[in-house]
Image 1 (cartoon, one colour):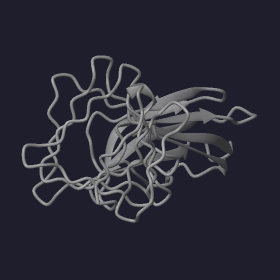
Image 2: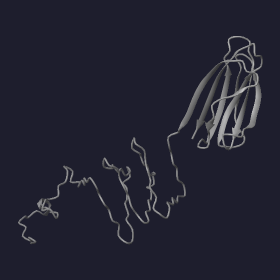
Image 3: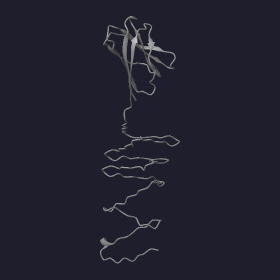
Image 4: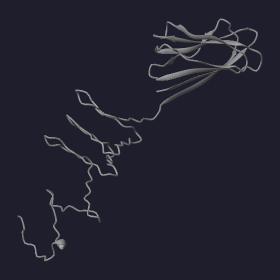
Length: 222
């Protein structure tokens, strides 16, 4: 039942307790701010939308341990003048779009992500086959850019030839770059101007009596 009886001559000294449905009073911190802690918080926006205005210092949302899920049939995020910063947890940031798809509209949207790199190196020693041999096949479909580097690391005079081959299916191969002759100590890079799913190096010794040692590098970014 409401209680309208207040005996206080100074309004600034009047104190009111607000109780929730569990008959427990709400508490504030020492500065008078109200903190909401929940293991699962659901916010239902009104029909005309929900507006969250961030302070000048920015808006920070700390999700619970199990993660934060935002479900909306139409969600609009308007960044403050100094920009909007979303910091992903160590486990990564996941966005699950609604059934109809996710549309992000912005006059200027900057998305910064960690650069994923691929760096593989192998050594092929005692190569004497002049007919040549294919090296490891790499799937490059998910790489934005990639390059092969080959070093003739032989300790004696032992030239070799190398070339880049690409393939759409991993069975039929096309000579895309090379062959390049590498003398002892030489280094070369091989890149493709045509995009196909698979790539590999094909190498051969020039003289079967001169064993070759090759260091082959495959490096890419996505």
